[in-house]
Length: 471
Figure (cartoon, helix red, strand yellow):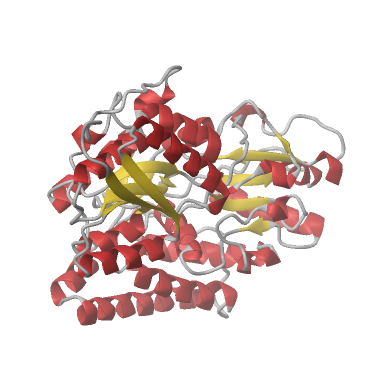
């Protein structure tokens, strides 16, 4: 039987609400906009010195065109001796004016609606009075090292406004934050700890009981959060019976393209479906003699996150592995992989420089905050647009989130194994794909039975841990 270019779409069932946000790496950069009607206007013959970078939300899958919402949350460790001081720092970080400045420096989308006004609110709720005694707060953040100077500046400004709150900043990875907080809590520490951390990692801290409950209404100010963040908060309250973390930084993956190379191959329209993407991949391969489609195939959390979006757009539930939409997505990836750039095996968060070095023509998908155009040396297709504008266009097409379950690391490991078997090792036939995915589903089920309990395993098999949709 001939390999299917694109599996037929299936009817999509209602997704069960669940939370998630993905790790992102942020690098200061300028970003480009979207023009569906005139993607490639007439230009001169493409040359290396005339490369143009173009960004758009990407293709629509058989089921939908929604995007995986990514970013970080802010939370407080339980047991702190002065929780009001910690809450004051969180209120400052979530202030609309601070968030708008953060978007300009890092590319993260503000979560407060007031941040999108000309003059966003600078008012921060008073939680820790200036007459209170001096308090010490440790602030851990997993934000990229490229943004350390910006974050340091924010904290310095905070301490000028709140001289009786002394903040020590630590730039560490999300897993390191989990380890440090776990160690402090189990050691009965009364330190005041605030953390900006990936939401997948925050799940471990919540389920282990290491987070302090928050009063979001007291901490936040402004006009309220954007709808996707409101959905996240509402679900958190309904499932966890309280607020234990607040969304602070939002990101959404986009497709990055070498405009000039596309034009050089005679492609004049942006691919809007997976069938068109497959056709364009063949055209690019024929023109340049090598695969031109690159993805985050590095492994770890990078590849599973990439696959999560593809599977949902095919109508699947990625956590299950063997949902019919998951299978269709992997069948498509198997066929598309013959046109992958050789770089795909090493590409991960913040990998994008191959666009400028002619290693590939399309980067599917990459987080906006990861791209620094000044390092690429490529011209922006439309330098007047900001990352917030482009990303919000993607958000308007729909978003979904994934669960910060404490076993997300094991799921990522198994999904990466499936990827290696199907794509990297390239199984002899796509007909082997369903059995490979079924095997990983069984492995996940066994892990949950052994390390959790039968109820969690049953909930898993019943599809409880599925994406939540929200506009």
